Length: 409
Image 1 (cartoon, helix red, strand yellow):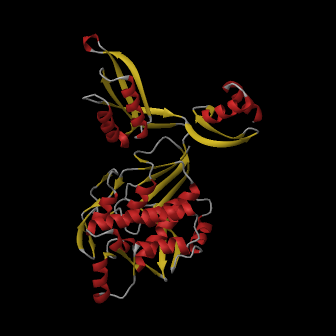
Image 2 (tube, helix red, strand yellow; image 1 turned 45 degrees about the horizontal axis):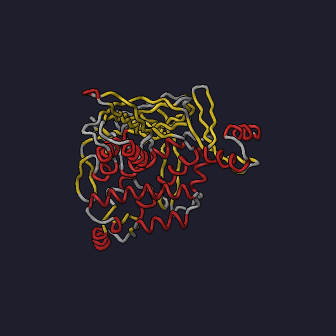
Image 3 (cartoon, rainbow, N blue to C red; image 1 turned 120 degrees about the horizontal axis):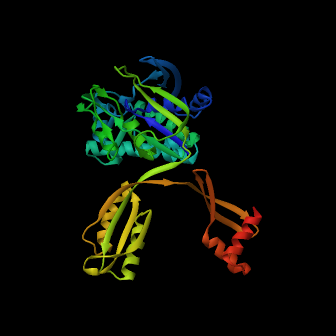
């Protein structure tokens, strides 16, 4: 399985993520030329080799009409509600401010990008707009972005989305995010680190502070991580093929960079929650109905085991396997649809084969099958509905239908 691991031990910003991913590509210079040919209004990407704490990496400059703006400007200093934007027009400058509708017009109407990448860019920007909306207490429709900051952010976000689309990892794992400490100065005053928008985006994401004074994770970096991460945690066991160092603008005592690792993991493991409860007063129909609701709610597996309970009563053990993120929802469903008054939980490491669905052309029409690989094995299983369709039409048994399909391959 192809894995991208992002080490955010010094936080993350849009330019750092761009530079780190760029180093993973076989032709970084050619990709920068492609970025400059996308048609982002007034934007030019410039790649530069740089050294921090003795480590060589890449820094990406985004020039707007030939000038460089730091990433902090497009999120903290120049993101306004509509009223703030009006005030800024009359008292500070006459720059244009872009709404989410304007950004969508740029991304959909002016950039030569695959539809998937356009969708990713707008989804990331929506996370930022929602966070700014929450921080300022105004609707998302009244959030406006400063002209220069908008192009800077669109450049970073577009570059990252396009590279992830081309690298096409099957899983993106991100370390806990170091957000820094202290305070950050912005147009609205002095804010604590992480800034409110960043903190809002990083809800449900493992993050931590430390001794380094300063803002290590920006809203753009946070939104990109939040959108793309499959999960957060330590680096998985993987055979690394490429490593990228994306350098930030500022210098600290530690190397200010995002590290990106691209590699392969032959085998796959993950953690699941096993939720269990015992019941002795439910009918078979009621248990079956509860199982249906649990599967519909996102359970990975639901099964029952006959058990003996106190006072020699026969009962049923109901066990649900689910992802950790779905645990609370599954517990709620167990209480809602079963008669239990208590649910037990155990965290279990699960070893699974990599699975993919494929469609094959046969003399009997299109047939779908699941292919599972890993741990030195490869298994293929035809979809039951396709086997049954062929068996009914041709007068075969299911086994005969499967055999005929195997002979076609």
